[in-house]
Image 1 (cartoon, one colour):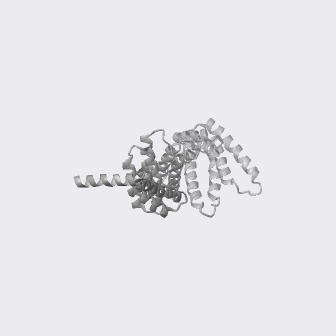
Image 2: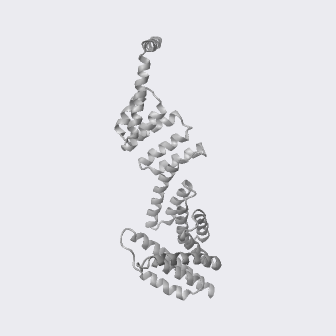
Image 3: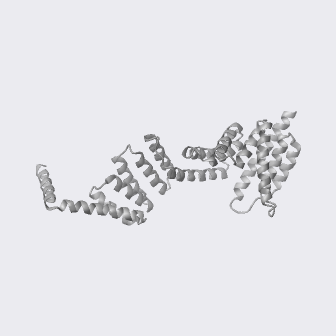
Length: 316
C-alpha cells in the first residue's frame, strides 16, 4: 500500500513537472466540449462516446453522467440511461434539477408514472422549482390516457388522470372542463359546477363550461342559475350557426341539446322527451371521432332521462 501511495505521488509530480497534467486536462475538457456539441446536434452516439471519455477522466461527473443518460435514452438504451441517472443522483441527491432531468429521461423512455414520481420528488425538494415543459409533457400523456378511459366508459379512471393533469398545470382551463363533464355524467353536480367555475376563471368564454354548469344546475333544481347559463349558451350557438349557414348540420347536435335544456328549465318534460327522441335519431359522424361522439351521446341521453324522471317525480 505504501509503495502504491509513493508511486501515485511520483506520477503526479511527473505530470506536473513535465506539463503533461495540463495537456491531459485540456484533452478531457475537449472531450466534454465535443460531447456537448454533438449532444446539441442530436448526434447521440457521438455524444455518448465523448461523455464516456470525460467520465473515465472524472471530468465534471454530474454533467457528464446527466448528458450521457439523456443521449442513451434517445437511443432507447433504458438500462444504460437509468444507470447513469443513478450515478448523477448519487452525486447530488438533494438537487431538484437532477430529479427533473431523470423525469425527462423517463419521458423519453415512455415511463410516465416514473416521470411523475420524479417530478413530485423535485417539487418536494424545492417547492419553488418548476419545469413547465416537463409538466406539459407528462400532462399531455395523462390527458391522452383520460381520453382512453372515457372511450371505455371508465369515468373514474378518466377523472383520476385529470386530477394529476390539474396538479401539473393548475391554471389551464381545459382539464377542469373535461373533469367537470365527467363529474356531470357521474351525477356529481355540485363538483361539476365547481370545476366549471374554475374553467371559466381561466377562460371566461368557454362555451362548454356554461353547458356543463347549466345542466348541473337544472339537475339541482336551480332554474334561475341554469337559465342564465342557457342564455349564454344560446347566444354563443346563434353566433356560430350564423357563421355556418352554408353547413346546416354544423352545431346542430349542440342546438338540440340546448333546446332540451330550455324545456327542462321550464319544466316541460313532455317536450324534452320528444326532443330527446329526435336526438337519438341524429346521425353519428364518420371517422375516428365516431366512438367518442357515441359515448358522449349515450351519457347525455342517460343524464337527460334522469333529469326528466326527477322532474316528473317532483311534479307528482
